[in-house]
Image (cartoon, rainbow, N blue to C red; front, side, top):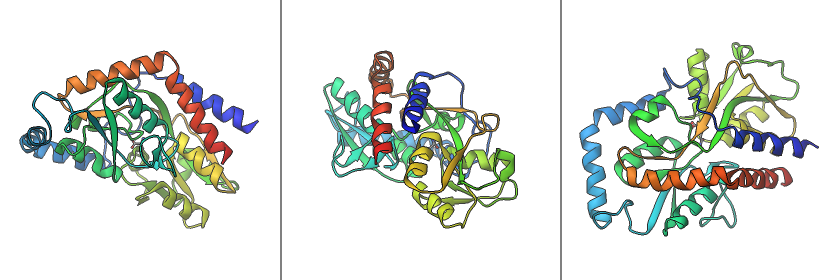
Length: 294
Ligand code: GLN
C-alpha cells in the first residue's frame, strides 16, 4: 500500500517538471552557494583560462569533453535514489536515477560515461576547473548557481521536507524555531533553513545527519523529498513532515560550464526525449521500488 503511494508520488513528481525556480535559495545566503558564486566571480578570468587549458591539454581541439569520446560527470554518490554506491552500478560502482540518465546521454551521443565522485560542495568548482564535463547530482537550479554554470532542461521536481521522529510535535517549518536542526552542507536545504534565520548544524552526508536524528542529538533533518523517503524507509521510528508553503518546488538539472553549448545541446536533446517518452519516469519508479524493497 505504502509502496504504491510512494511510487505514484514519484511518478507525479517526475511528470511535473514545472518552470518555477527554486525554493528558498534565490536571494540568499547559503554559505556554500555564495562561496561558489563569489569564487566564480572573483576568478572569472582565471576560471575561463583554466577551462581552456584543460580542454587544450586533455582533449583534441574541437571536442566538447575533456577526453574525446568520454563524458565525465561529477556527482556526490550520497544521494539515493539519484546516486549511491552499489555492489554493481550502472556506471562502475555508481547506481541510481542520475547515473542511468548520465549513461544513456553519453551512449546516445556515441560516447561512454565516466563518473568522478566528490563532495557536493566541490562539484561546481571542479566543473569550472575543467576536471569534469558536467554535474549530475540531483542538483537544484538556483539563481546563485546559474551565475556560475549553465543548466540543462530540468528533469525532476522535488521539494525540501523535514524528517522527524514519529512522535515529534513538528508539524510545519515554523515549528523548527526552537528545535535543533540538521542540514547537509551545501544542499538547498541548508539555504532554506539559513533563509528562515534558524540556527542549524551542517553535516557532510545525509546519513550522518539522519544518525544524529536517530540518536536523539537533533530534532529535525531538512533534505530533499525522495532522499528523505529513503532514509525514513531505512530507519525505524522516523516520519516525513511537509510544508509546501515554506518549501517551494525545486528543479533538478545537469550543469555544464558556461558557454559549452555543444555539450548542453547534446544533453538537452537526450533529456527532452527521455521526459517525452517516459524513460525518466520509469527510472524513478525502478529506483524507488528498489529502495522500498530493501
Ligand atoms: N537538491 C539539493 C541541492 O541541489 C541536494 C542535492 C544533492 O545532495 N545531491 O542542493
